[in-house]
Image (spheres, rainbow over the protein chains, first blue to last red):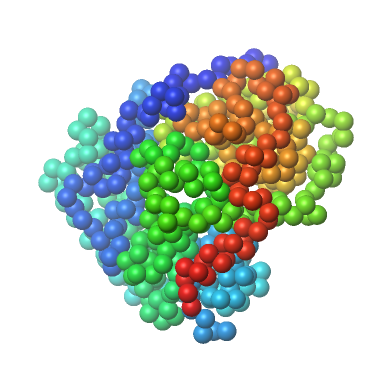
Length: 68
Length: 400
């Protein structure tokens, strides 16, 4: 069976985070909505979707970085 | 018994051992319906479900709130709100196309949960909120709602996290007021993320208490017989992983993981090993068949399972984990050597298992030894009493 080279070109742990990571984190924490404050019964509704927005934006930027 | 106050909890199998002892003090109200059913089926008394407090009026109001809020965002996009002008999906029609429906669906569910929590509190009286994570919508809503109402919020993390602490990754942010940490590694990790020491109490990892019950754990010989493995075979267990895009890998995870599995097959051939694939529970349905087919094509003897961790870790001469993994901690608790096959962006601590991108993997496997020091750092004390400590921690912070 043929073996393949498993090591990626860059390891974020050693080379620093992917260049879009901080951008995505800031956007997911609400920056993408500018000054909009969306609350319901004292709960910050923007914070409740941070996980999904971070996931979605990371996919977009990762795909873009990989030429997709 | 019915006059006990309510502890609102998301649920999750990792906290199963807490339910019966906590029910002596509280009525448990579950956000997760599956956990509610499991607790009731296990005989936990007076189990409540949050869904019962979301009547038609609550659901209707939640949908209206979500519609209005999502529409506010769509209007802002129409008025020029731009996330990134260089990316098609992040401005104009491309942005509106996914943001509108996604926000409506997410916020309808979230607003419904918030109203149901308030209804539960009004009718039954909630004295505490317990979550196993506070980053996904359900856990974060629970923690935020409790904080907004002045009710103690407690986070008992369901796993050690191995991405680099102190980054902006979502897992480094905390919403619940109090953290029940598993050991000195987790305490240090959250400390590096900025969590104050006085918010943390070391309790251990309750779902791992069973692995410390030596009479209940299978012996190596029993585990091998249960999996149909001959006593004299070398056994390699490969613990797979999945990837969360909130943690950036920086390359194509699917292709990379497939390359890693090729390397595992090649290494198993080199070691003349029986190969057990212990799948991550988050992997997609049907992946079992893929692994089994590739094992067969490689001419190896093997087994594939998502469950039976005690058997798959105990039967092995060595466990290779794909990236740093809590299943590697389980193997270490059971005295089985562990080796790490790296993934980008996350790593065991320096005192943990040795690792490689692939080069020299077979030799690392041959050289690996059990590492109790690592297991103790991940699960304080290794005494099987984490459940006991966690229950006392909840009772101290959520007085009746």
